Length: 432
Image (tube, rainbow, N blue to C red; front, side, top):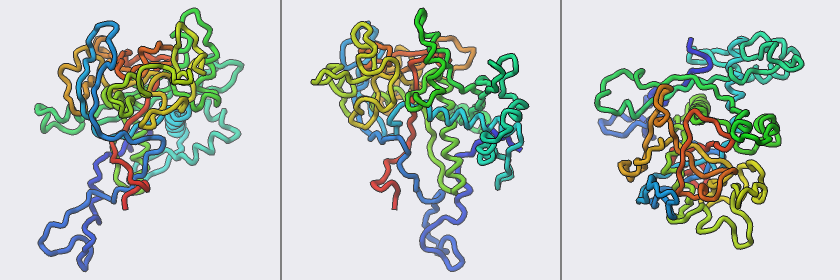
């Protein structure tokens, strides 16, 4: 039996070949027996509608890099012409509610396995019975049963004896195929297992970052309430490091492809973090030379309203309408329909921060990645973040400004949004 929590479905739909073929069938069914080539579809016809909460970013070319002077004269991101293929991107940053779905899925998987709430699938593997888990959490003896599981806090760690779950036990195991390694010529002929990465990730957000990030500053209410209180449900999730962001994308892919597989439909591309080039292209919204998603040159519109959530002036945090973060769909979207591409929270990308990256990366979908291991030097663990945040000055809100954070760091001002490589949706959501 495969592990209940960590099993994933292969993307290759070779089994779907059976029964698919031309509309002209022979008397016995299947392809016509006329000695001609008619073609065989890889599976059921494409019928995936527009991904909910995402907008399509059309293909195009833009000038990547600073649209204004470089104050530090670092010349680490030179302006150059870059072409980007079309993709889908989340209209907003991933919210607390959306990330909570991930946490609860992992929680139910661990608890369901330990309590035996499983069912056998048609493929002979065991899976968590999600319907039973919903009933379990509303049962009268839920605390008694939870006490026998590994996810419950031990008695010494409880306050007034209240039963609570241990956030550190919320472990998700990533399983991903490393296509770049498999594509290397020296790896030709090696077994597929050599290129499958499997590793566990503790996925609960680091709520203590609200206190840790700001010395001599009172932020305890945000630590206690930001991720757990319904008032902040539609605010961007923070306290998530780069590995946790990657794990969320991996789970989101599993969630979609598991559903498609259950409906015998063709599986789709992976959700993932955007590359630096994709993020900048999307943030500009078709305004190739603009400093900000809304254009040049100012942070206010003609009525004097601030256009994003950041640190105006010398520290007037609430002037833009939010003291800390604001709802993920606040302010005006850019011309592609993307919210808060400047300000609110900075966002992880998949790109490694390397000062000379613009000198050698391709001008077609540029992408410079490095899957840093735990024992790699800190220099190799720098990942580019984009967009600036609620605590940053206006310079970091520019679409051409790039900075970095270490991939194992959690911050109260860094979140994420996902992209997925799918064709543009037809006008009515599906092909005829």
